[in-house]
Amino acid sequence: MEIKIFYSKDSKDFSDYELLDTGEGEKLERFGKYTFVRPYEDAVWSKCSTPSVQQLWKNADGKFWSSKVGAKAGWKFNKVSRGALDKWEMEYKGIKFFAKPTPFRHLSFFPEQASHWDFIETRLRKGSGEARKIKFLNLFGYTGVASLFALRAGAEVTHLDASKQSLAWAKDNQELNAELAEMPMRVMEDDAIKFLEREVKRGNKYDAIIMDPPKFGRGPKGEVWKLEVMLPKLLALVQKVLSDKPLFVILTSYAIDTSSLSLGYALESILSRQDLDIVGKVEAGVLCVLETSNQRLIPLANTAVWSTIG
Image (tube, rainbow, N blue to C red; front, side, top):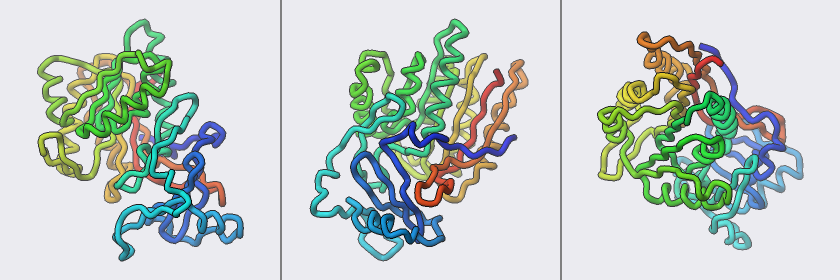
């Protein structure tokens, strides 16, 4: 297993997003024309002391307060920035999607996953050159940005989430991209485990799978999800729905008590396919964003990628 830092190396690729500064348990970010302060407990250093950066902190359009600091949890917006409550367009490498502050501190997508979006599109385009239709599965798909990159790469996309609201958002994001709006993308509301169990029975297979399971959640029928309990079962089912010529499996976790090595070992254990002559490798590490103020790589999630060589 290789250890790797995953990040988008050219900030020009994501001109609509910028991690401006971090420190003292918070991060300051620009999403399009708005700036926001969000909790980032790992920032155990001081904020940038440059006056211009300090002014950006002071003039942020909104701030998410964590209950951990003794304040009432949730967003608070400056009076002059009420427009930040409405969704607005963002873009990364030609793919458009909406952003909006959500009750869960994030803004409907995760900018640190841009390097995964790049990998997905590049690897799927290469796989499509093998004269076959690539089947891509996005489990816990949320608002669907990764699915759009897979769709643009020519894959047959299945996008699954337990939230009706997230699925509606994913459809809106697809329609926002005129060249993708008419492409078939199967959008499904379902519990990930139950869906995979049915796919195993049906004999359906996928060439590429991405999953970002939550630490805790509930399915559409109240199914309880606990990461530490359900992840082994999830991965065992993922193994069963992989095709005979798989391209990759991506696993990401935002749970603070997981590690990238644990995710990497988990992928290695399920993808040792003795029945197939497939050579693959696992890369494990952290998803990062380059901070503008100090040019530091800021780790935001643990991830592991298994991919075939070639």
